[in-house]
Figure 1 (cartoon, helix red, strand yellow):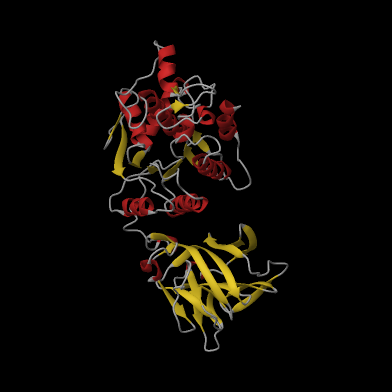
Figure 2: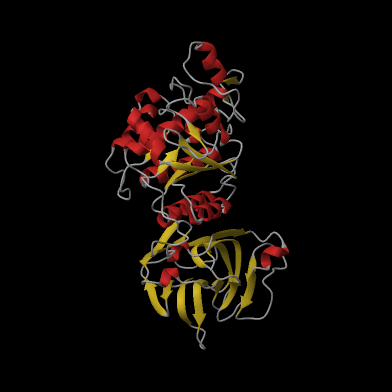
Amino acid sequence: MEKLLFAFVLSCVAFGAQAARPAVVADHTCTDLSKLKSEDIEKAKAQFRVWYGHTSHGSQILSGMKAMARAPFQYSRDGKPGVLSLREVGGDLGHRGSLDWANNTRAQLNAPGNDRNLVVWSWCGGASDNTPEGVDTYLDAMAQLEQDFPGVTFVYMTGHLDGGGADGLLNKNNERIRKYCVENGKVLFDFADIESFDPDGETNFLKLRADDACNYQPPGGERRNWAVDWLARNPGHHFDLPSSAAHTQPLNGALKGRAFWWLLATLASQDRGAAAPPPSRASAPVPAKAAGPLFSRQYRFKSINEYRDWSLKGVEGTLIPETGGGLLVPRGNPALALYKDRLRVTKLRFTATIEQGDHVNWYIDFQWDGDWKPAKGIGGVIRGDGAMLTLDGEVERIPNSQKSDIMRHTYEVSIKDGVLLWKRDGKLIVRKELPEGLADREGQLGVGAWGSLLRVEDIYVQGYRP
């Protein structure tokens, strides 16, 4: 069944209502290069100029590619006729919502004379300790890059195995990435799946708690190594093995190098990607959505420095509670914890508990009039009789919506492609297409309440700085 998955994904005209074209997924079934057409390999070398960000684990792909770097699978930094151009950059996808990689990508693609048109970033250990929110930040940032640089192919990736097995956090995060890519027609290099199988493809070693070194735990026995065992059983194998591959066995590196060439040739065969270098964006108008770097930060309020990015609006006092974490927003009409930086917000997520009263408010790019009513911007409130949305001073009551209570809830507001999604505890409150221009404005954001005492904790902010 596992061998059939990729063929099904690739052969569909579309997978799911959202996918305009099928996903392309390089997994453990994609290492037999004898099935590739020579013209597709040559087209890939002529068409793609790869920009690959990685640290040690990601170098396994290149270890495999170097071992087989003879015609037709040749590559170099700058390339030439018949040789793929592949440039490496230091760094990886980081941990828990880090976006340094995305900002570095923008700097490269916006640079005068840029000719890179296929971008890949790999994980190191960041997929093992990530959160669903951190994974979504990665996926959102990749999707935004795709929108802002339509002439570039972006390759998503799963994280390396860590011995956690099918029920581990890593696999849950990887499954989240896979599901998103398949449902939205993305390009995925499934790093974890490739090292979950030996070349025979009959045993899924992930289920036997395999790790990045190819060690696994057979039922009732001592730990073994699938790569070492397979080579011992197949002394006449045809693989070009590197002398070494970081953190793993040479066979694993060889399989990943072959899968990467399969991915390039398959993309070329489908004409996915730019046939010519993308124009330098330094001399072209920059779309509104690309203005400034994408910024994100998680506030858990474990130190005094985290409070310094916030100020209190509407009442006197301090945001720092005497006991416990988070921001303590006193009663006011309204009172807000105001984020000091101006952003074009793409995501706001916070957890809040009403300690007195019945209001929870949030605002994005707002301005107040003299009567303490929001005159401009986007805002929302949940109170005892339901939820309301405010768009530039116009208040819209949400019928049959959730009501406030004294429980602890997580609220999330995201804006993408002009559409606002507002959720509480993962349940959708409202989906709203915003008036033209409203989603692209920059301003301040606030969280708080009206006549209530609110404790706000674990705030995540994402957006574009001016």
